[in-house]
Structure formats: structure tokens, C-alpha cells
Amino acid sequence: MNPFLKKLLAPRHIEYLSVDRNLMILETSRAVRQFADRPEEVSPGKDVRASFPELIGAEEVLKAVFEGKKASFEVKGIARFAEGDKPFYIDLYISQHQDEISLEPLLLILLEDVTENMVLKQALVQRANEASLLVSALASSQDYIHKIITSMADALLVTTSSGQIKTINPAAQKLFGYSEAELLGQPVSLLIKDQQFIDDIKNQLPCLNGSELLRNREVVCSKKEGDNFLVDFSCSCIQADGIEKRDFVYIGRDITERKRAEAETQKALETQKELNQMRANFISMTSHEFRTPLTVILTSVELLENFYETTDKYKPKVQQYFKMIENAIRQMADMLDEVLLLSKAEAGKLTFHPSLLDVKKFSEEIVAEMQFSKSKKHTLKFTCPPEKVFGWVDEKLLRQILVNLLSNAIKYSPQGGMVRFDLRQEQDNVSFEIEDEGMGILKEDQERLFESFYRGRNVNNISGTGLGLAIVKSSVDLHGGEIIMRSEVGKGTVFQVILPLKTNTMQ
Image (cartoon, rainbow, N blue to C red):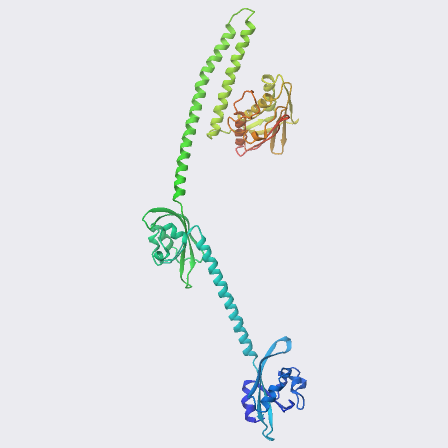
């Protein structure tokens, strides 16, 4: 090999070998073996195809180059694997050359290490592919965001930090009555007439990307026709094209109809409140007005009963009438008491005054009263724990609960039936369970049973006002307790009242 040629090839990390017409190696450079697939085969007198199998099948082309019919032949990007399975790449160039001594033609094979270039090229290709994927993803993301914005029911505006409109969605165009072309580049003050709202947003610059500046602010806006209306706006800050630049995103909803509905609802509530107060005042006044003549009538009847003289023949009958009148008056007085109590409960004026009470003793007294006054034709069975049961309860409200439940159990049970009253203490609660063997409550009536003046449809001609269970429910609620009802038509009903023995008002 020409020394000058060797000097020329050295800086480019190019090695060489020369072969004859039969592709037998004639001469090699010192480091050419590192490029061979089988380095041990690289030596003079051996077939070059054994060490460089890439030439197998290219014999006709090589012959044409040897004979000068083809200028050169090259194979690029041949991969070899060094230690650690790290690839390196070579380019192979073949051209005709003349031996300096014998002047015989030969083939000169040049081998160049192009690993660095190949790795760089692969990295560039990979980066290009990644960039292409990012562009595609960005396009998809922009399309996705565009579809969301255009399909939003709420109005969306995007402005620069100085307030110039950059983006407006179809909902905003419809809301304000402008086209997109009419609004782009215009100040947002064209739409939003609340300058304080706009100033409040500008005053929060610089803001963090994605931060919410204002939320649910009721703002006066103007339509293209000049009509003012209310919009509920929220505003956030987003990064614009420049790193230091920020845009504002406004999302708004027309609340004119909602505000009108709220005003009408508020007016209706105030009217209902006035009606409730009038009803409460009327009930209170009526109760007091009725109570006076009833008291007079009852007193008069008692005087007549004591001083009225008649023959022995009519005396029993007269005494019966007196009792009937007294019972009717007391029933009317009780009903007035119930109406007044329920009116206070509905108006929120029913007070709760707990005190430490012997619940067991109190229940026994209620049972004795009921046994004497209302259950002469029924069996009233009371069971309770042997020890005393004390709790902080409102005595008046507890009386309402027990008297009403026991009265109903007796009233709706057949004559001779049994009413069971069980008192149990369960940890910090006390349970009152009253069970009858009466007609039971229809399933369709059970959900409304605690409503005022509501009565079951199977009560027939049994008298009642439909107030007792509503009073019971209000009294239980004031205690922070719970009432549970189980009933089966024709078999009876069970009411269970659970009250806490301790309350927050306990001293």
C-alpha cells in the first residue's frame, strides 16, 4: 500500500485490505480485524468472504469492479457487536487499484468506523419520531379541547392579561349575541359591565398557572342589543404563549332566570311564613277563646250535677247526661291542647326543658292513669327492669309521647284485648315499646302516619283528630330520639320510642 494513502486514511479511522481476482486476501492494515465478522480469517491467502460474509452473493459485482466495468461497490451500515453486546457500525467501500510493484490490478476494500455517525443518526431519527408523536398528540389534544369548548353549555372567554378577547366559544356567542369575528380582539369590558370585577382580576397578576382567581361572582353583563343581565362568572389564570405571559379564562352562566326564581321562591317563603304565623296566632287565640267558655260550661255542669234535684226515677239518666257533657267538654279541651301544642311545634316554639327524672316511676304513674281512665275494658300489661331508671328528659313531652301512644293502642284494640308496655334501659338509651292487638295500619298509610291530621283509611268510625302521632314525632325529635313502627293489618301495631338518657343540656 502506498505510504501516502496510509497517511490519508489514518485520521478517518479507516482500515483496508486488498484482494485479487479470486477474492483472496493479499494485504491488510494492522487493525482491520476489528471490523471482520471472523477476525481469525483475516490473513493473506484466505478468502475475504470468510471474514466479511456481506460479500457473499456480490461476486458478479466485484468482478465488474475488478475489470473496470463498474467504478465501485459499497455496503453501508454493517453492524458488528463488541463486548457487552454494544453494536458498532462500519461502511465498506470497494474499488479497483493497481499494485505498485507488479502493476497487477486488485480490489481495494476500505472499512470505516461510522458508529458515532450511526448512533447520532439513530438518535436524530428517534427524536424526529418522538417529535412527530408529540405533534400528533398535541393535535389530538387540541382537537379534544376544541370539541369540549365548542360543546360546553357554559360561556367561555379567554383574554390576554390586558383584557383583549382571544377565544370565545359558541355558547358565549349565543349568550351575548355576537359572532366570533365581532369579539376577537375586543376588550372584555364590551361584555362585562362590572369594572370592579375586571380590576379585581387584573390586580392578581402575576398569578400561577392554573390558579383560580375568582369563583361564582355575580356580574352584570350586556348583550349586543344593549340588554343587561346577570352572569355567574369564575375566572382562572393560564400560561400564554410566552413563559412570563398569562391569560385569563372566564367561564360564565346566565343566572337571570335563577335569580328571578330565587326571588319568587323567597317571596313565596315569606308569604308562607306570614301565613304560618297567622295560623299559629289564630290557633293560639282560638284555643284560648274556646277554653274560657268550655271552662264555664264544665263548671256549670258540675254545679248543676251537684245541685240539680230530680226524682229517683230520672236521676240515673240525668247523671249520665251530665257525665256525657263533661266527657265531651274534656275531649274538646284535650283537642285544643293538642292543636296548640302542634302549632307550637310547627312554628319552632315548642321548647325542650330536660330534667333528671325517674323514668320508671313516671311510666308506672302513666300506666295507672291510663288503666283507671281509659282501659277498663282492656288489659294493660307493664314490664320494666327491677332497678330504677333515671334520665334527663322533658317530663311534659314524655307525657305526650306515652299518653298518645297508649291511648291509640287502647282505642284501636278490640274490647278485652291486651296492650303491652315494655320499658328497657339499653346502655345510654331508654326504650319504650307499646304493642297492641288491634286492626293494624295499612302499608300505604304507614309513610304518612306522622303527618298532621292524617289518619289511616281503615279506622272506620273510630273518633280521632290525627294529631296524636304528629305530636309524638315532634316530642321525640326534640329529645334527639327515634321512633320505630311495625304493623300488620289484623294483627296489631308496635311503636318503639328510643330516647337518650343524657342530653347536651344536662347540667
